[in-house]
Image (cartoon, rainbow, N blue to C red):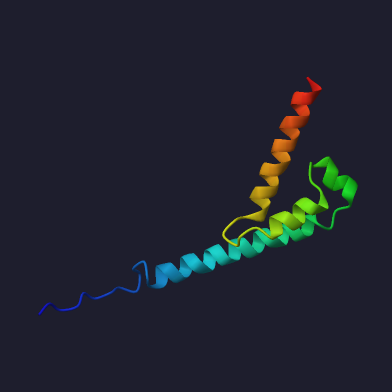
Length: 88
């Protein structure tokens, strides 16, 4: 009969996993707060950065594993690229 292997508290399922989970949770919460702060801008300022109020709602309702600010940045960049192609 084999003896069970000891599990150190720093193994993937121990303290390191908890720390990683907490870090991801704080980053996600901070990211959502930033998007909420952007939502306080008026519609003209949002349009200046290539976003609409509907974009903010869409980003905030993405799966929780995503980062709303990254989705918004990607969306705004795509719109700027399309606008620049049309201007040429």
